[in-house]
Length: 355
Image (cartoon, rainbow, N blue to C red; front, top):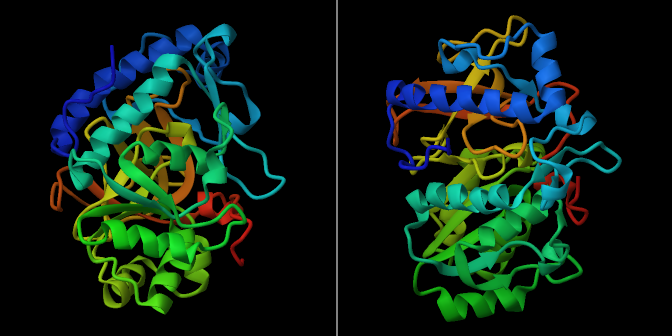
């Protein structure tokens, strides 16, 4: 069975759960058959093989931290094509995610289907708010490098806004806008880097970004320290640069290829049709009702080379509503990291940014 890819943001919540449940059940059995440590973990928790689950919420999940301490893969060693590592602060342990060739090809395909909802099918000129040096090692990527390389597939005529010393290349940015600024263009970067190395440069040099579409993610901690939340981020970009088409997204290397995208109205994230979120009570692990914060679990039918289809994150979130927003399904927000969890936003690891 393959992941569900027909829709992007089209399924209402009841239809979504009806489609996801058999796919997630099949993935659970697949990983139990091909990943012995995963099978042992589920067995020790009392989950019998071949079990039927009554809902997506009942599918057994793994804490995302397990990938820091265990080798969890559902492919033989000789079929491992690429190993991805998570972001983390200096000295922190990292997750290792094992991909075979099929999985490595699948992930950009699912990401592409999701992002087409906001970008359209035409590849646009692309301003990367990063340095080209981040993608030089093609076999073993950091989460930041994997994110940059993955997003580069959706643009053309790429220009990097930072030089190889991780400093803003103002002339490169101006040159890109001179060549492409009169037509729609794509901007990608991690949130803190976009703020420090694009917004502040654009404001200082009075650059017009009004035809841009910004896709950004991660690294909110440093902005919150500067009293810049998502609403202020959007307001200041619109006011000072003319940029209004802004989409934050939530994702992680442990479920790469699956991203939860901010809708056009802002301030809510949405699940693609092949994924969902469950907000869990941190004491009972029961699903929280709408409006009550808890720990975010992410589910996706994409991970097949490793058991990452149901993961309990270390992030707090809340579902704001169901089938009542820009797109069908749950709309939710990420409220921050769990207390004592490692800071791990991709741009929070950027050495050039002030803490």
